[in-house]
Length: 152
Ligand SMILES: [Zn+2]
Image 1 (cartoon, rainbow, N blue to C red):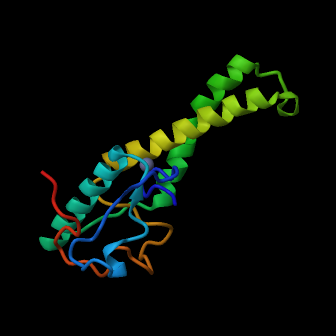
Image 2 (image 1 turned 30 degrees about the vertical axis):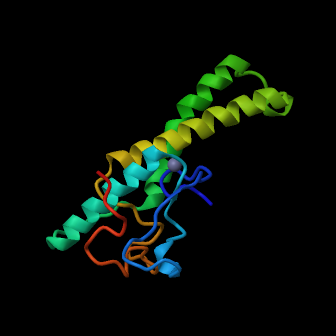
């Protein structure tokens, strides 16, 4: 299971949809899983904005999720460059030790997941994956109220 926000492995943060009874599969949306409290909070904020906008008939401009991914990848060029500089720009990839290769991967993965969370935190509405009109909109069957029990 991947975190809905940053695509890291989810770690037990999820949601139950409080409008459905216990045992009803709709009570446990499978996609709504998160790696951290930070990602869960980000999802709450995006969803609440989306629900409000829909309720008041405002137009919701959604960003394509792949645009966020491409922007996140571009941000990782700097992290990649910094590690490559430490290892040495002249060293061919084939000559990297496993440890050096892992340093590069760690720098990129860390940068990528941070960039994904930052992009979602800065966004107003949830992004859509790939299509301008999603075929299986995860919010399609939802009313305008928040599907989880409000926390105070
Ligand atoms: Zn996450």
